[in-house]
Image 1 (tube, rainbow, N blue to C red):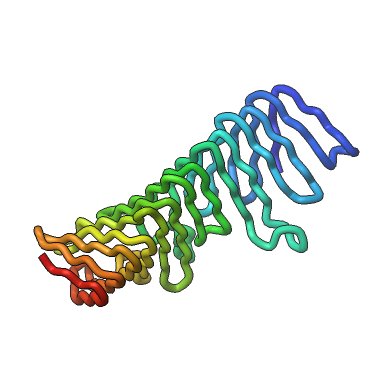
Image 2: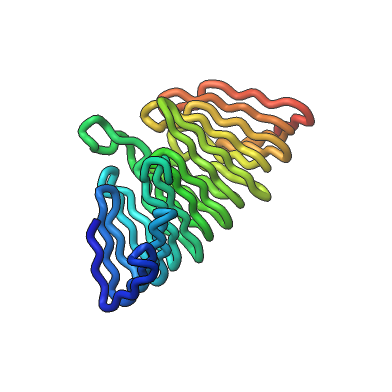
Length: 231
């Protein structure tokens, strides 16, 4: 671990440390700069405030925000690294890496009032959330993303919206939307519930529930039921 600042104040035998002015922090996972930082050793937590910039040294993901709490991955303390940003977060997230450490997909650009990240494959954006990647744009009150062999994104809002400009896709809105992604992070299926509208090529479908399936960025199936209306 490397620490640098204009001023340092230590408490409790260096278990709690405050750094002030031009703060720089490095460990095996992250490179961080901020105006101030408080380190709580027992929790392995860094409280970063003022022009915070975080860069993941493994994935290349970046985050900027006025305030960030960073929980270091330490056995028996924090089993996975966690980052909580507030006050308006702006992030570029590479969700997957190959064995060589290189990203296997384009990054997600995330803007939200608050952002929570747990490890490299899980993020949650809250408050006027906007998530963009290639031909996909997602907006909602909150957006949650989980990745394993394949990935899923969950959108809540009034309403949530998913816009895909890939080939013959369209715009999907609803109070709750689930987007399933293939191994290459392309959209495989979209499911929307409650007050659903799907717009494509000048046509619209409204329903309680709608399922759209896609393959190689092309719409391959569409099902809607309950209160269906085609215009």
